[in-house]
Image 1 (cartoon, rainbow, N blue to C red):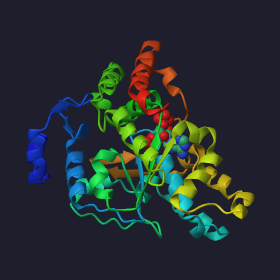
Image 2 (image 1 turned 90 degrees about the horizontal axis):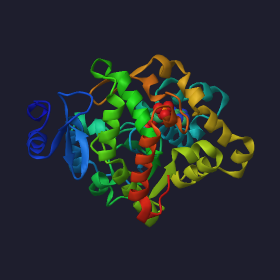
Image 3 (image 1 turned 45 degrees about the vertical axis):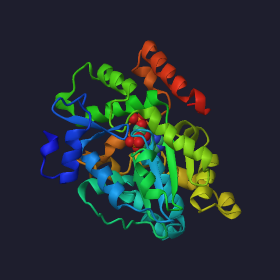
Image 4 (image 1 turned 135 degrees about the vertical axis):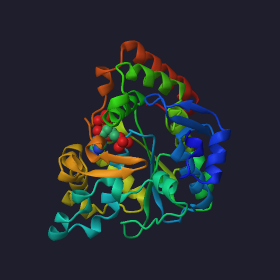
Length: 327
Ligand code: A3P
């Protein structure tokens, strides 16, 4: 069993053997484990334990946070492009923009995987003045690490119906051998029950949502759908929040539109690095192309039955009702 694997610390092994576990839905030999109300794979338990023990956020840290498949790659690209724009704004350096040759996940590493591999990983980042970091961990898991810091968190949320479909495609790409035809129904059930990696989705969203209401200078809460609809407006807001506001000249010169184009689905997904490159996140190699599928709002209608849509919408409404959150 995973609990006994020698790559884990004794603390992780003890934890894994004492907390609730369930079979991962698509791979019957693997488990996910419940820790502090959320579900994780074994290596993520190792990651969260060592992060909680060793990571202290700096005041200048900027952390992109999300539930998986909600637009993390896009938000990473946008945040990176915003805060580093003065270094890559001349005609020559434009050609060398890191986003043209590196997948956004390499430019903003996941704390989750860094800490799952190493108790004290090197957090030196590519960005110049701030460390740009990222995580799928829920806010509750991060609290100890950020409580004494003025770091900022940028959270992206998405309609869970689209997130579950995106997740299903992502998994299908990486687990073809174990993928049965009923996999979507099985995943859907697990998603509704909250028993999926980093789930329950709604608790994940609410943690960041509540903090964004209480401390708007600390957490910026974005929605994938809004970014799609009004990218200019939200990019200006994002830049302001990150501490890199656009000047009036930049707005007039079309810098905002330029960054939106640089980070657009069409542009990023057609770059050689994202078409044919591979990166290592957590366990194994992932094709960069897996992070770019359709990039649209509402694709779930092509996969979920009306009954599934109704069920998921009902759960979302019930969970968010008391918190004034609409998705
Ligand atoms: P779809 O599977 O619906 O196409 P994450 O980055 O959190 O893993 O989320 C992946 C989702 O974001 C995928 O959704 C992917 O296509 C979409 N995506 C990736 N890059 C994007 C971009 N630059 N603009 C808009 N959507 C993007």
